[in-house]
Amino acid sequence: MVRVEPATVERWMDIAKVFGPLGRRADSCWCQRFREGAAPDNRAALHAEVAHAGVPVGLIAYDGDQAVGWTRVVPRSTLPGIARNRALARILDDDPAAWWVACFVVRRDHRQAGIGVQLLGAAVEWAGSHGASVLDGHPVDTDRLTGKPSPSAVFTGTLRMFERVGFAELGRTFPSRPVMRRTLTA
Image (cartoon, one colour):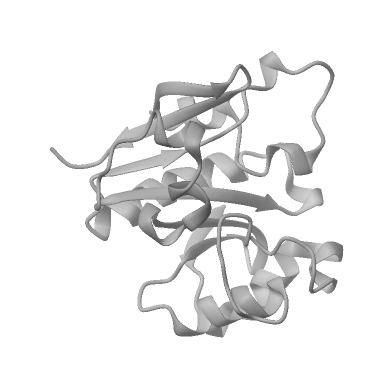
């Protein structure tokens, strides 16, 4: 049975465990792709976010007591890399209450078990409970790729995940990159 909890500073070691072997490297992504910060490295940047956030910036999936997954879910306005992306700007409206689900990390030994879908479902609830009007994301349509994608190529999730959780496509920035939305409030 998987449960999903907010990523608080008390759970920092669980977040680090989810990032696995790459998590030992301070310069690996650490879910900083769409952020800008002054921290000395990506691990320190995420730690500072988790430690100082008024509202947790992510969610952690647990299988029993073992942390197995992570997702970042935050107001879209807090991600400069999304706001400045011209391809996304052509599709997204200017909504200060819009939230964004930016990335997914699932431990290798728990992939293909639906953890990403459960994290995305929890992200919908989390964003909605914090006043989001919509939750947007930019997954990969794996049917439009040649060959099997590497796990690092689908860190933003897959189209199938988003469809399973009730998201609708707004448009595409590239043939394999749909922008998906779940409306949360009227």
